[in-house]
Image (tube, rainbow, N blue to C red):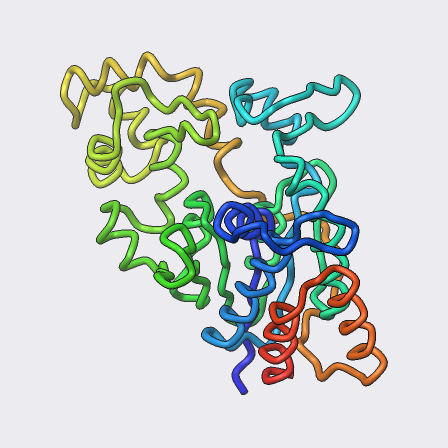
Length: 308
């Protein structure tokens, strides 16, 4: 069995499950469990298809880190429902999803899937760090394009992209990025910085869309090269030069916001998928009954059991 690590962008997956799975099934206490059940079904499918030997649920301990907001105040600002001066801003999460988070954490725990987060950092940064320090090939499961910057063919790091649904998963490698966006994985963070991303509150360089971002990166390699060319008045149209020079303040800080942190001091966790002891199997059944997770938990247990 070839070792392979699967890193789950957990919030990306349970948000998708919440909006994609009907909330007709409820736990005995009345709370919906569609996000929890949907996440378990996703895990079952992902483990069955991609056959990891190790798995980690990466967590947003801070979904909007202050250090990123200090650099770009609009970063994820449209998702904030409550600003907490002395703490983390409160993200807009539907109440029927919010009440399922403890269920999701308990279900992952009883399945033996470690949950890893980091103070003042997003799950993306946890994923970046674990993928960078991994000695085995890595599958990053997410619906977030920001993580395309972590693709590394030489190290076997790829993204299993869920944005088109679980029945139409895409495996993103460098060739995919060149074909889709015209840039290599090593250029993707700069591409995202130039293009901007309304879903994350990143303005981008005004007047620079995907095609222009690709053209500039193909010609000049990276943002440093683009700025140097603009200042020298070489290798781009006058209009492009004007746009780049007008955005120098943004370009001085945006790469730090967009780039995934890869150097967090994370604890070592045992991410191996192992056979479940009898007492753990009994506990899993109890959790499934307590929260009405039913066949979804059973499918996750079966898939993980086949790998353990």
